[in-house]
Amino acid sequence: MDSATLTFAALNARIDQLPNHESLSTAPTKRQRWGYVVRFGSGFTGLLAIKPQLDAKPATVFAIAAGHQPTEKKNA
Image (cartoon, rainbow, N blue to C red):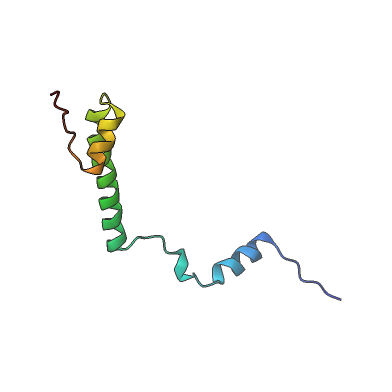
């Protein structure tokens, strides 16, 4: 029985002959790139919006996040 010997050079040649699969493409589409820009931009804007509120009371921060204006209680 004659067994074929497999060398690294022969193995590399066999691997190189395989066709590339379409899923190996790593270039993002134009829509994906715009999605990344919008996501990173909105995250950065959100972090900038939180920075001035770091010294505020937590109740005020939650009220601003909920879109409500804090009201002052009048002493009668």
